[in-house]
Amino acid sequence: MSKNIDWSNLGFGYIETDKRFVSNYKDGAWDEGALIDDPMVTMSECACVLQYAQTCFEGLKAYTTEDGRIVCFRPDLNAQRMADTCKRLEMPEFPEDRFVQAVVDTVKANADYVPPFGSGATLYIRPYMFGSNAVIGVKPADEYQFRVFTTPVGPYFKGGAKPIVIRVSDFDRAAPHGTGHIKAGLNYAMSLHAIVDAHDKGYAENMYLDAATRTKVEETGGANFIFITKDGKLVTPKSDSILPSITRRSLMVVAEKYLGMTVEHREVYFDEVKDFAECGLCGTAAVISPVGRIDDHGKEICFPSGMDEMGPVTKKLYDTLTGIQMGKIEAPEGWIKEIK
Image 1 (cartoon, rainbow, N blue to C red):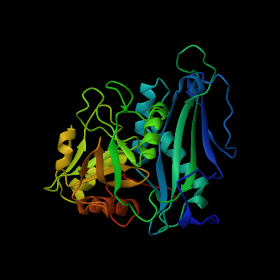
Image 2 (tube, rainbow, N blue to C red):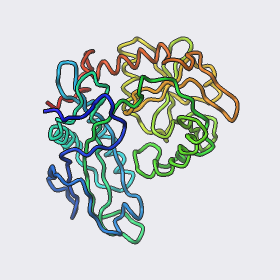
Image 3 (cartoon, rainbow, N blue to C red):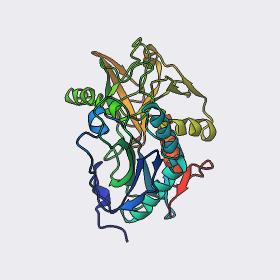
Image 4 (cartoon, helix red, strand yellow):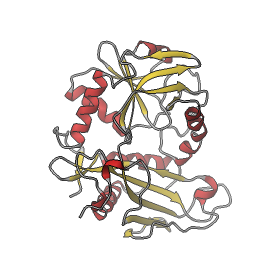
């Protein structure tokens, strides 16, 4: 039975659901894990995560398709990305097949919280891991906890995706050879000041440039950029310090295979940006957020697609990818994981 929730008025916030998955790593091995009722985490005051921020996370969604199935989108890529993150943070990898199974089991256990088709809402899934034992000298933890919780969330944009205004940030998101390419909690902690400052000044997001030369486009705090050229190509920035967005990688396939577009994944210089026809930010939460204007220290870059609605090519990309996710358009093999 579906829960008595006003699906159409859900925000993007945490609502406690019935079950969450927990597995503990101790003496060099992961235990088999279990679904539990208790949402509280108990650990040492000296836990490595609290002292030295040894933690990482993933984000994906489950939703109801048009024909009533509950599915999620490419969870194997989240499993792989968390494994890559764990290697970089000296954390034990949670086996990728077990990661996917934990996601499936947690969603199944909370199936009554999956919003109905057409509501615009989804069940957000948050797998995460942290160093749990006491560590006072600077070193990796010996014990870890891997958890998965779910929470129903409303559409990221109420009333449709209106183009947003962003600014070129004076802050750096990630250093060359740093941790920008992994989904570490510490990346998000250091971006909080920049995003609060941007919001205080009336901007929706920051555009971060590469820290070494400040001439190339990287990403925003939580999304990759996509650009559409005036002759209809999809261009996405390439850098070793950009997080490999699953949405962005999927849009590149959609553009090429479904829409017959030329796709370029390459370094994008900031002085090229004024010549693009459309711009968007892509990620799990919103899929694509159209950008209408970029403020570069008082100089404005206005895209021809304008401030009223998503550009025509971006809209086609958005409609095709969400159509695949919702079961209206046939998906490439392995993209849709059926839960029940």
